[in-house]
Length: 191
Ligand SMILES: C[S@@+](CC[C@H](N)C(=O)[O-])C[C@H]1O[C@@H](n2cnc3c(N)ncnc32)[C@H](O)[C@@H]1O
Image (cartoon, rainbow, N blue to C red; front, side):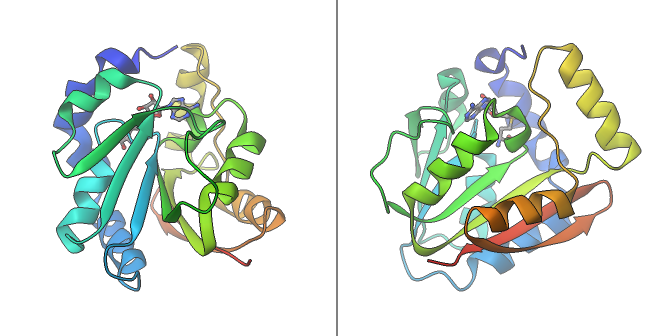
């Protein structure tokens, strides 16, 4: 297992490098239509790096990170709320958030089915979901997947089209954008 609880400084230092500019632009485009003070939950958000990117384009947003590794939280900005918890059992009421973010986190979730059920439970009506992850159908994506599995991680990586179809089965309409060996998934609940 990767000891995320002790790796906050790495994610804080290298976060901006891991998220290429094109991904940050896609995130800002996705956030643009949200209403003022919309509620955002960053699942597996770690130090809140994705919330920081969100804040640069929409500083009105109400940002929360949920993550099992509390050690990451000491690096979070003061405008980001933090809550210990896992994607498979989100510690929030039904219909709590306008949007969920998952940045390089989905592949760490042990039970994707439970995590997606929880995602749609805590999202408000017509809520949206933004995922950023590595494409397992590329050489670099495959290599990272293999390395993570060797480290005892779940390695639940997807090809974007397979994830898009899976999200549709959970009531989302979804599309994706390829960023080289990475992708962003842009989905909206149809209820
Ligand atoms: C590669 S880090 C990414 C952190 C952050 N999103 C970023 O981009 O810097 C993966 C994160 O997923 C978290 N994580 C692992 N298993 C999880 C689970 N079951 N539910 C929610 N988060 C989880 C880890 O603790 C870690 O903070």
